[in-house]
Length: 346
Image 1 (cartoon, rainbow, N blue to C red):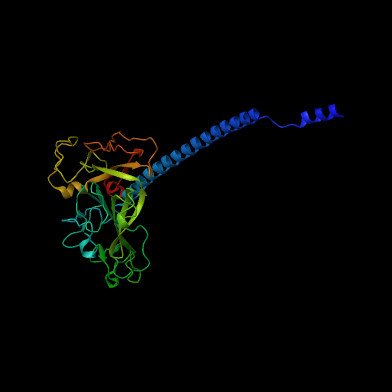
Image 2 (image 1 turned 90 degrees about the vertical axis):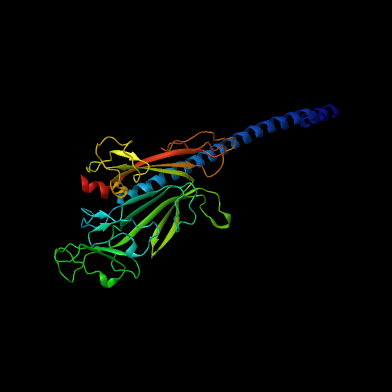
C-alpha cells in the first residue's frame, strides 16, 4: 500500500518553480510580440487614414474649384456675353447691391468678368478669416437653374429673347423690374429669372476660427447669399494655393500663354502671338479662358518620426517650404476651362 500511494503522489504533483518561470517567460515573449504586431498595425492604419484624408481633401478642393470655373461666366441662355464688354471698373469682391455687381445695358452692354484673381495681401473686407499668404479668386455667373419667383432684395438676371423688348436684359432686385419676354413675345409669358452667383475662393489658417482657431488650414468659399457674403469651409488641410491663368491671345478660345497676373504686362514672357497688346489689364482678364490650379494639401495630424524638410513647387518662382514639422504634404494640380468664355470664341 505504501509503495502504491507513493507512485500516485508522484504522478499528481504540479510543475516545478523553474518550469513555471519558463512558461511565464515564454508567455510574456509571445504577448510582447503580439502587442508589437498590434501596435505596428495600428500605426500603419493610422498613417493610411491620414494619407487617405490628405488625398481626398486635395482632390476634392481641386474638383470644387474646377466645377465652379467651368460655370463661371454663365450669364443666361440668351448669349448676352457675345459682344459684351467687361465692366470698367470691375465690381469690388464684396459688392452686394445690383448696381455694383457689374451688369449694365446703358450706354452699352457690359458684364462682370467671369474670373478675377487677387494677390496675397489684398484687403477684402468680407473675408474676415483669410490667411496672410492666400491668393483670392472671385468667380461670377448666374444660377443654372431658373428661380420660380424673385425673393425680396436678391439680385436676378432676366435675359430677353423678344426682339421687341427695349433692352437685352434686366438685372435688378425688384420684382416689378422683371418684364423681359420669351421668343414668342407674349406679355403673359416672361423670360426666366436667374439669381446672381458670386463665389470667392480663399485659404484660411483655421477651419473653426473662434476662440483663437483650431489651426487647421482650410480652403473656404464666401458666397453672396441674400445680399451678404457667407463663408463656409470646403476642404481641410489645404495649406497653400496658386492659380496660373491661361490667356487667349488670338481669340480662338484656347489659352496661348499662362501667367500669374493677367493684369500685368506679360509681353516679354508671352511671345507666341506677336502684336498682342498687354496695356489694358481689363481686356487681358477678359481673355482668360483656362486656369491651372495647384494646391498643397497636408495631413490633419502629425506623423511620429516625420520631419518634412522638402520643398513644393506650385508653379511660383519660389517653392513652398521646407516646413520642418511632422505633417506629410503633397501637391495636387488641375486645369480648369472657362467653358462660357472659351466656348463662344471657338
